[in-house]
Image 1 (spheres, helix red, strand yellow):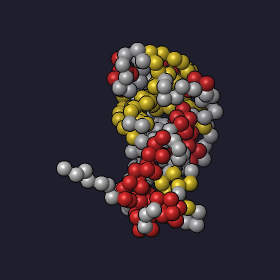
Image 2: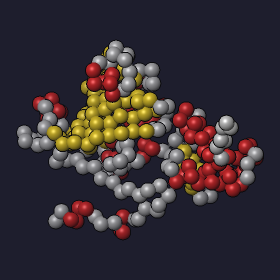
Image 3: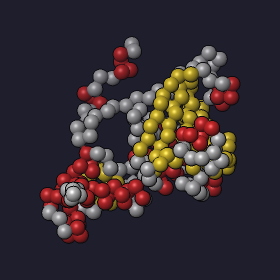
Image 4: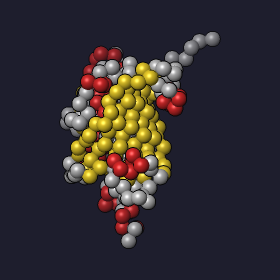
Length: 255
């Protein structure tokens, strides 16, 4: 029985995706052009065009007229269905981000952490606990565990200058993520650190991210319910998004 060979355009896509996954191509790096792919890979222009077009539609790369094709920077996204960097999110609102590190330590994975990261009990992980501020007002507690062999220099980083999200994305581009958003009653420690009212609920994002086919971080992100919301605009890959002027503004519906 013969093995079916993948179409040539798909082979080109797989090669580029592999280079992105391993970090050989990093966010905002230039991707080979159609002409370069034709010359280097001995394919037709139609094949090279299709590979780049589908990579663009699937979000792996972005094509900038007159400049070329570049690896997408997933860190700049701000969408309820996408992984957000809190510092970028705050900057997009024109505000100032700051951060206080409460814990940056080494520990052995147990219970929920080991299960979430698909590792054995006792495997080494790093624990990060931070409070993020927007214009000096606490907006998020980041309680994150990172597989140690994925980011061996994690404890040496200054996370008051660069967020864990930005640092970890710079090591290896995001391949896959899942998150659950729920409202809950915070404990006393969360309430105090976020300066919340006694009866105020918190908004918690539970998130796992994958790199090279395995989960490498597990985080709980706590937010004060009265000072934080998740919002976004989704369109299927390849579908042009409407401008904000064409979209019903949810804020107006609250009035």
